[in-house]
Image (cartoon, rainbow, N blue to C red; front, top):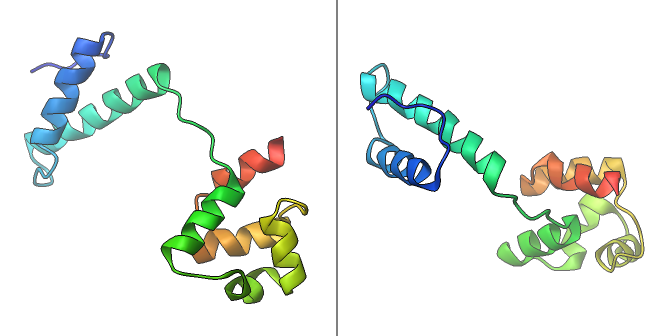
Length: 120
């Protein structure tokens, strides 16, 4: 099929279905080229029609801690004292740039989560 900019939900559904069919295409094949194009088209449609909720950095950190079975004291090497950790996790204290960098690296959290917080 010759793909064009996705303008309708029907176009989007067709492209998404085809994308799933060829998702594991071998590199340097016509299907691989088609997959690359479909990824761009579907992302473009998503960006124009669906707004993703903004993530709260504290909620992401708490979720990552729960996921790893961590307690607040486990963040001491990253954030600092127990008091700092408590005030950060309760929202009483802001996450500094240095802390954000360490948390981003430790939990593999996208930097955008912290950038959103900084712009508010």
